[in-house]
Amino acid sequence: MLNYILRNLFQRLVLLFVVSIIAHAVVHLAPGEPSEVDPSNPRMQAEDIEKIRAAFHLDKPMYQQYFYWMRDLMTGELKSFKDSQPVLPKIAERFMNSLPLFIFATLLVWTLSFPVGIQAALHRGELYDRSTTFLAYLLISIPSFFLAYLLILWVVNTFGVPVIGMRTFGMEDANPLYVQMDRLWHLVLPSLMSALAGVAVLSRYVRSQMLEVIGQDYVRTAKAKGLDHDTVIYGHALRNALLPFITMFGLMLPGLIGGSVIVEQIFAWPGIGRLSYEAILARDFPVILTINFIAAALTLAGTFISDVLYALADPRIRLS
Image (cartoon, rainbow, N blue to C red):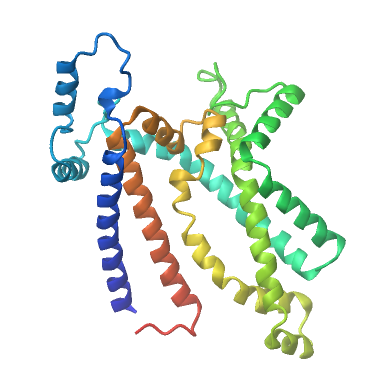
């Protein structure tokens, strides 16, 4: 097992290095540079553009630009093209803003999907199953930004409360309890919008897995032995149906980076997804590349954790 973990970890580190090279090449080969973001600026002269390119090593060969980027990233000296602020503290601040959103949305997805999917499998073909299937496909089909705008309009018109941003304007000097309650309120709607499509998709997976498992011989044997319904379903069937979701759980980590771009943009939530969008518009190469690097690292870490947990959860897997 230890050899498997070490070998798997080494392979992912090599893959991360390869991904960083490819991402760096793609970003720099794309048309446009930071000095060309506002070509209509009459004060921007040719020599000014050359100074900007030299200051950010854009006049160097691409392989040298890669090594400059990795050197500055590892030493913490990497700065944004847009405002010359350190990249890592900027990303860390936005990351901490996105973290509560991700945690709340994930809790909603995983706590709602399993009861809905299990009950749909147990009542296959009945009204509950047909209604949840229709609702799931409806939530998958409707664009999230459209639902978000409808939800914002309904909440504002019905309750007359602000829902945009992380806090209500003017609440900075209020009672700390009110400030925390206001923060939680602003967290509810974007978390709900982030979770809706996830609940719809995951509940369908749970239903299909449970339908496959409850038809197995060992489930029928457990019922024939006289075990009660809950023991058969939750102690035998669900335990084996959970194995594919270990892999899905590991793949949730990249959602910290790119899973909330639309929601954060609509709700003006200053998170890392919105930072990525703004960096792309500004052609802020250091921010784009660093966020891409972090996303790749989270993806590889998630798959690594999934592989290890899968091997631990399923004794039928033997690692050589």
